[in-house]
Length: 311
Image 1 (cartoon, rainbow, N blue to C red):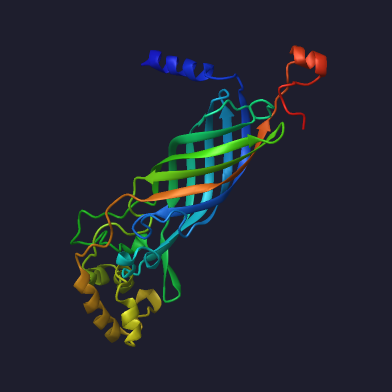
Image 2 (image 1 turned 30 degrees about the vertical axis):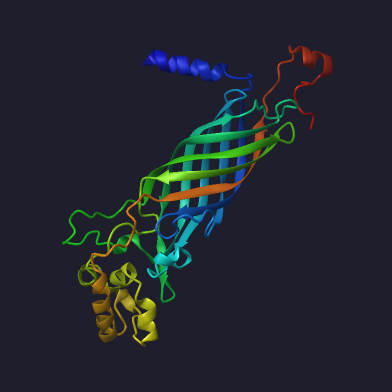
């Protein structure tokens, strides 16, 4: 095993022009989610994302990268395909993502170089991320995970446990980078994250028993678990709003509404497939330039390195 690791390290370090250096920079872009409330609309409901990037160029073809991102993702079944709009489910969440991996350049690339200043690249690695899905009900914002909207924590569903709000993902993507000066490089990149959770949107499996959910969790949990009858109930004049401690303001009206919700118990709520999210945007990266060796022939003749840009 040690021999294999040694061979790989030698291979990576000898591939391409020697160009070892460090870079740090900023990321500004957007993030969006793909899952039960957005099946396939790339950049659908895209929201802000910004972060920091560190890159170590092993050589002109390979770089190691670490990045941290802070952004937001959202989803709404009403903006999904028609067959799913009736669910009337929506969410929004802050997204904190830390990734580490490698970049592989298609062309030889050396930041600050005149001869190797542009390349497309691909990247991949592993990331850890934190999320916390929330939604609005009657103008009030609520966290969804503590409510157990799919029966998590109920006595009748012993196999359903509350989902974790921190998970792992596999990031991969494509990009381009261009060295515009001796120390500054610009880039564009688009990356997807394959997650290991189906609860970015708080939607995964089936509707639980609405009566049991209301009794053991809260009436609010039942109301946010199944929202497909919400607009009809309001149109019929039912008062299904919540008061202090998530107790219905009108117990009689909410009891009528709860009977309607129970008709969906056991029905399919989500697709039971892992969610995805994407981060795309612009990078502005600064090369950390160390002291140059004055023994270099180019330095002795020109007091500078001719390979590198002069500004």
